[in-house]
Amino acid sequence: MLNNFKLGFIQLAIIFLPAIVSQNVSGQAWSTNLKKNQQQFVDLRFGMFIHFNMGTFQDEDWADPDASPALFNPTKLDCDQWAKAAKSANMSYGCLTAKHHSGFCIWDTKTTDYDVMSSPLKRDVVKEYVTAFRNNGLRVMLYYSILDTHHKLRPGKINKSHIEMVKEQITELFTQYGPIDALFIDGWDAPWARISYDEIPFQDIYLLVKSLQPDCLFMDLNAGKYPSDGLFYSDIKSYEQGAGQHISKEANRFPAMSCLPLQKRWFWKTNFPDTPVKDPVEMIENNVKPLNKAYCNFILNVAPNREGLIDANALEALKKMGSIWKNDGQVAKLSLDTGAPVISPNLAKFKPVNASWSNDSEIMDLANDDNFSTAWKSNPSVKQPWIEVDLERFQPFNTISIVETNTYLTDYQIEYYSLGQWKKIPLEQSRKRVKIHRFDQVWGSKVRISINKFTSPPEISEIGIYLEPR
Image (cartoon, rainbow, N blue to C red; front, side):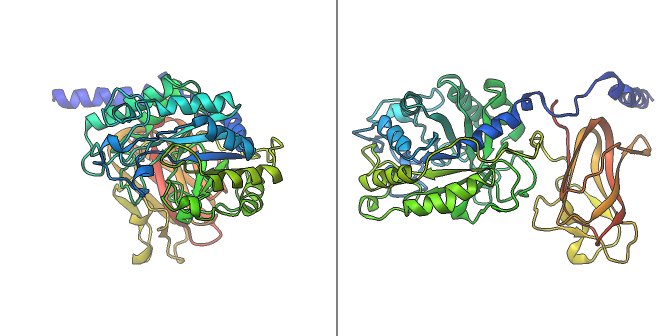
């Protein structure tokens, strides 16, 4: 009886909680300047990616995670040469691989001895890079890999010490090197890395970066998984052309980045000095110019050699680019207010689902399988389709996303099941393919989407339910 009394009291308190706690549904506090920062990123237009790490010294893009730090020995390291090379191409910024997938840190970190201070160089490369680029009037960005094979930070092996290491390393990078315009995150929720946003909590890392530098843009390079017309787990949409990720130059309305290497691969290879680089005219005409018009910044990787210098053929190509193109400032004013990106764990992922009739190959379980290439499709004979996610426990949430395969829904409602009854969530219906509804926090154990009108049998590829920080 005592347990039932306590449960009833808690449930009663929960009913009144939304009235006590005021929620800001317009978005998170750190997103106040998000659109301005996104616009500034797009307006930078053209930058230099710099893959320089242990892979430089192994002729491999995926370096041996057990390679000795003694291998890292750039005898003529000159970050000022890199910066002047970027300036010669009229680039606006650089982005350096502070840590790549093998886990070697090229800054003076206190988190591990697998770093540049244990190498023959014994110099903080990140510090020299940011100093040189700023001295040459260029913005600075950093690349950081979540996947870390040296420290065994990989799927199924992650523990609390790994998460603390990531947080400590990012704190070092964002407290010791001045303003960082953007952080490029790699190796997270990608098919080849398989580290989920739950194993290394995305929301925690995102909020850490924003707490240290609120204006820093957070960019996850895993763009291919998520729809091009929605911001999920990134402030900027990213497209790695070599991985088959191509932006729509006609339809894109989101702030974006597209990347390619100038040489054949990302890290320097022994044949680079004698191998032709990509055509500089093609880089400008087929990438910089059309991408800029599509709200997209183009970043071109230029890999320094084992001495720590950029090869002559790459220097010549960069100068050629600068002779035929210059940055004239803002080229495409962002017309779309994307709002804050979704950064929280998806409470609906892999939870039990029920729905109105569909064919077996298009069953309801495909609507929350964390795969945007599959979808639940209602049988054409169903006049009022519905789909329901069972959260398996009574819990709070304040955001729901619905991603269709096309814009078929014309009239729908969202309800949540709370304390024995279904309650409607007040919302402004969206005709976008990616619908993100933010509202005052509610508590419930189920969420149901009822579809009253549609132009074709509804197809929902993913449903997301989130408790966002506000």
